[in-house]
Length: 93
Length: 396
Image 1 (spheres, helix red, strand yellow):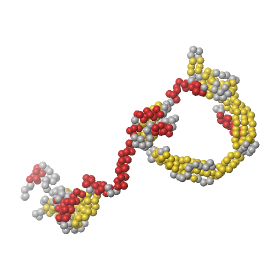
Image 2: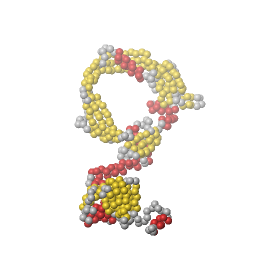
Image 3: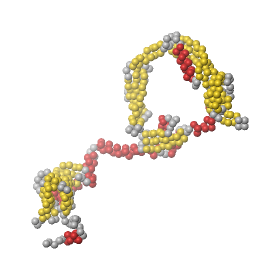
Image 4: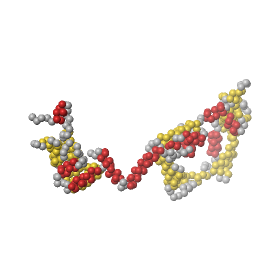
């Protein structure tokens, strides 16, 4: 069993399970039409059916229809459209 | 959606064509350029919104990566203001409107009069204009005490005057002096005097001391009932009141032409337009405005009124001239004097307060195209009239 990271142990001790850990990417899905990704590392692939966003722990593949990058700043990225799937593809996987 | 702060700075919608648009987006993102509404157009082309200040940086990155950029749209308040600079007429109109918005509330555009009963509004307005309360006057000056005092000195009939301003309206509130305040003492002393020469036939006194009796001949202006009552050791001043009937003699001379001109149908209508600006009348027609004798003139002023009921000093004046055809008509059957007699008696009756014609002697005739009637009438009528003492002294 892999040992938990320092930040994970602090979060568990403080019972902050719902809060994002510092320095790590954070993905939030609002209903079926909006995905918010914080602390991303850029867009790897972009078309209307699929958007691949690079994060600290791998790539997040957002699939759907009529996908649009509504907002793209250094800190966060907002994808809107009809969301069909959100898939995490680990770097080492 | 554009933020309000971005809107002030201005935004641009840019289209970029690159072999790998994702990589370019990543580079732009790494360099700190924020993008909105990133639209996938095709495998090589994307479009997005950026801030105006980031455009230079975007051009540099795009050129380095061999991309072609195209500006599709510029939006935001910054660009709208910049576009406005190329429309000087509209810009000057907006500036003029702003200046008027700032200037107009400091000026008086309408004057409203309240509280006057006997004094006419036009007279108060005329005097107010002399005091500086007129169209375009400063609101600050209008409200001063000096203006109110000047108005009171120009209109001595006023007891009090106040000027308030509500927006562009100056409201002059006045209070008039009452009769009792003017001459309360003088009004208490009144006499009943004879209005005509005559012989008193009936005497009914309600207040005051009698100075005549039934059957006495009296002259015009003679005091019949005095307002002073002598109590022996004191003299009471009252307001005399009495009903005094008397026999009077009246002489009446009536003259009327046998023939007269009668209007006979309209012969068209002519309308003349004039523009009234304040007190200046601008003639919009060509003629002098002097109408023919045979014309009937109708004068109408149509003022420009705002929805609140305030009237602007601008009016369209319509002056209609309606010419008539005239023809001569004989008044009545020549030789029949009954209608002249009736007219004379009606006139005499209308001159009496109350009374009747007892006897009349008339002499009729036709002279130089005129009916003439000379009559002497014996009447019985009210000859007593109430007069104040002050008035009596003035008459003498």
